[in-house]
Every structure is written in C-alpha cells, then in structure tokens.
Image (tube, rainbow, N blue to C red; front, side, top):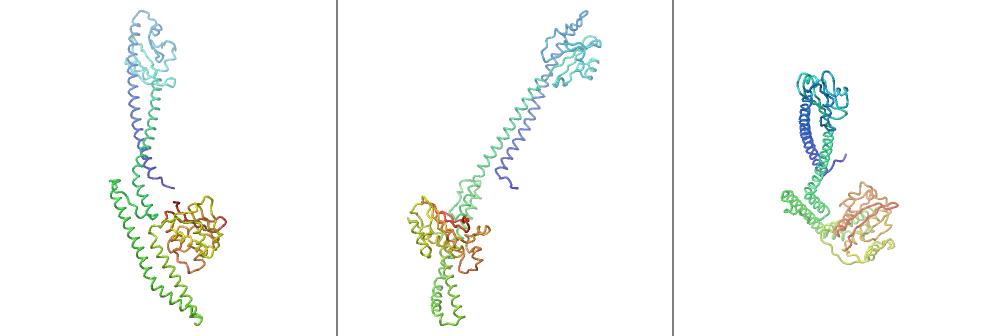
Length: 445
C-alpha cells in the first residue's frame, strides 16, 4: 500500500487537530449553554409556580371555593399546565383526573409531606418540569412547564456548533496544506537542483540566502555539487589524458600491424591468422580511444550553426553506404536547424552503426520538428535492458548474443551526451511492426 505524501499527512494532522479542538470546544460550550438555559428556565418556572400557588392559596381561603374557577383564573400560556390535588382528588383546567399520571410518585410523596419541589420529566416526547407547591389544608398545587421550545433551541445550537466544528476542521486542513506548501518549497528547490545536476547541469547551485533556516542544508548541497563537479572534471581529464597518451603508441602499433598485414600472404597460416586478429583488435582499440576522447570533450559547449538537416542526414547515410531513400521527412519540418553539425553527424552515425551491427540494418530515418529517429529491423531491446542502454560500456543483449567483439559499448553513450549537450535527450521505443526505434530530441532554436 502506497504511503500518503508528507503534505497529505500534515494536512490530515491539522484537520484532525482542528476537529478535536473544535469538538472539545463545541462539547464544553454546548454543555455550559444548555445547563445555563435549563437552570434559568427552571428558576423562571419555579417563580411563576409560586406566584400562581399564592393566588390559588388565597382563593382556597374563601368559603366554598370553586376550584375550577380558581384554576381558570390563572394567567398561563400554552406551554404551562396546572393541577391541584385536594382531598384525594385531582383538578385541572381541562384534562380531568387522568392528568395525575404526569406527576412522578416521588414528587407527590414529597409534596404530601409538606415540602415544595420540582422534577424534570418527559411528557408527550418532550422535556417538561413539574413544580409542586403545598397550599392550604392538604392541597398541593402542581404546574407542568413544557421545555420543548428550549430543547428545540438547543438542537439548533448543536447543529450550528457541529457545522462550525466541521468548518474549523476544513479550515485546519486548508491551513495545513498552505503551510506545508510553503514549508516544502525550499525542499522543492533542492529537488529541482538535484534533478538539474542529474540531467548534466553541474553549475546548478542553491542560494544560501534564500532560506536562512536551511543554511546548513544549502551549504552541504552546494559542497556536494562542487565535489561532484570536480570529480567529474578529474575523470574527464584523466580519460582525455590517457586517451591522448595512448594515441601515439597506438598509431605506431597500427602502422606496424599494417605493414605485417600487407605481408600476410607470405606468412604461414597460423601467423597470418594471428596478424589478422591483432589488426582487428588494434582497429577496435583505436575506435575505443577515439570514443573516450569524444566523451572527454562532451562537456564542452556546442558550436551551433545553421545546417540543412536533409543534406546532413543524407551525408551521414552516404558515408556508411546506406541508401538515402531511407529518409522520411515529417510534415512541417524546418529545413535549417541550428545545431552542432559534428556532434549531430556523429550521434546519427552511431545510431546507424548500431542498427547495422545489432538491429538487422536501418529501415527508416525519420526527421521531424526537433527530432531524429532511426528504425531498425532487429529483435528490439528487452525492457530490463532499456534503463542502462545509454550508459557507458553497456552492450545490449543483441550484441552479446551475436558475440561480436567490434563494439566498444560507448556508441549510444556518445549519442546521449551529444543530445544532452544540445539541451535534448536520447530515448528508445518499440517500432510499430517490430524492431527498435532510437530517437534524438534536439530543441529547435
């Protein structure tokens, strides 16, 4: 399972933290508000009940009081319900004796003992408060106050607080995303610089003043890039020096071998075979030295000049005795390209040589806006070999299978170096119908 990215994890942490904080604040706020509102509502209900009980108590002091009229005289709203228990009977304004079922037994017992009290109940699926106040004689006045409106208010408050918590959580995620985006920007610059170095731009450096908090990382990265650049320069200088030093004795050796090779007819069979092998190896050695020198000079800037790309490709084909009708010009391809002629000719020539040696020969040379492609008729390149096919001293499976010894393993590496020197790249794909398609991308100037 793929792990989530750092930005996603940080944003999720911000969201969870904001949700937890807002949920805690929401819960505490809801509890405080609901408790406060309930207490205030109960106090108001108790005061109103005592006021009504005083009126009932005064009315009961008269001779032959009419309990029904007394209850009807009370000024109560739609959310209050009054009861009177007297002499074992229940009186109400409208409900009759069945209203006694709404009064809890514990509260009735408390009121019978002469103590006033209140108790919260559920009546008709709504919260209500029952307040009991003893009156004259053995009577008890009850008032049932509905708390339904308060409950609905609290439900609306809960919805509002929940929506606020969700919005705060979303805001936390947005803040986390914004913070990580800006916090990771210096790391993105490091990644971009590393990518530039990997693509061959060894002059890439980080600005040490851009992020003071990352000064150590910046200095370490720049030091690494400096050391890498120096190491590559030493390697190139070493390869160039060695190749240059080898050319003189190699030319002498080649001249001597050439003399012997011209006299092979006068030698015995074994000696003639040995001279032939030496001549082939000296030729291969000369090619290897030339390729090493070419790679050593690959870091030098390109010498751009206008070139007729059609003539250039035709000249490379003719130099290898290949038919010029292999060229396929794509529509809208400009005639004149601003390129380093020597490098482009050598890169294209190496691709053609590779096709002749290992690909069954070229079948087409495609020229399009900013690219050159060489199609061959070979078996193609397996997927496992494609990642290293343009590396130095790497020979493809086709070369190894044929056992050829004339390749140096540097031809495709030189192609990649020349393409990179132009700001482009070399790539490999499958040719439709079979075979390989090597491509050089050259940015149009």
